[in-house]
Image (cartoon, rainbow, N blue to C red; front, side, top):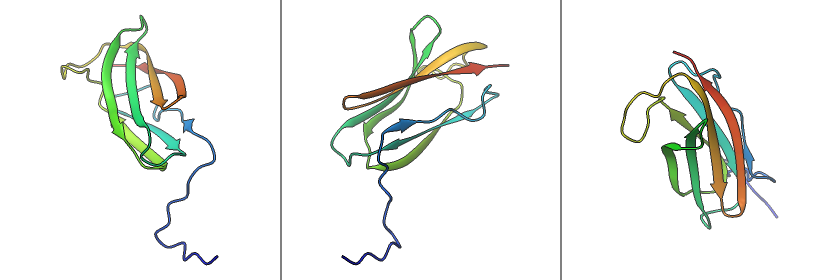
Length: 106
């Protein structure tokens, strides 16, 4: 089979949640991830504080397979700046979930 490769999106073999960059956050950070399934599952990224309380719903939509990245500006769902400390970000897409830590420094 022939493929031109020009506008073809490479589909990753595994769903992955990457480390945010920069970490520690000051004042923003980028959260990137890869998805293997195309528009079949709703994808969420939720940021939680160290006590497990939801701080920010960063992503809540169907996304195509491939690599994605979103910038978090350190603000919660009410657009208020969060305080310094440890935060968790969780990727959920279908059956796949992954959580990583990050630190906010002001």
